[in-house]
Length: 233
Image (cartoon, rainbow, N blue to C red; front, side, top):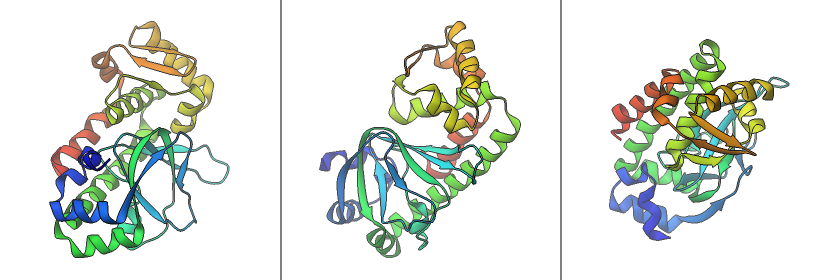
């Protein structure tokens, strides 16, 4: 699977030496739906660079409903805290869509970052992007209605897998957006009646991406702009 390394766009911005070191110290794994890659208060052992999978970073406070802070695919990585020398993160990283990822121990990740200027610059830029996305998620959850947020999430997930059809149950969407399943059913039904989205038994198909974009809140465009302006892709 060596040829697939460049499919992670973050790694694609680093130099050849970095590629070689990642391949030397990392290994390829297949991530499966619902698999948890890290949890709060548990020391992080590995960082992951997805090439085909999608992972949700989900935050939950005690008995409150969970909410997704970000969806990570081949544009990024899981395990940004270890890149800063910190071995804990406050959220859970849960796989949404199966696929491959390059896994590397946090020890090797940190060593490579300290010794490779190219890798360090890319990771620092990515950390800035993720921090901006976390801040945007807080604004989105507080100010935008459910249909706007649902449209934004569906477009983001579609971008991460480069497909307009994917598996996504209403129960999972409710967990990601921090709402009741009945709310998801109402919002999704409205989109389906408008022939923007078709869903059945957990299978989602975006029929009209432009129309869905019109329904989405501005957070979708703002997050894309963050990637383009900071990481230049």
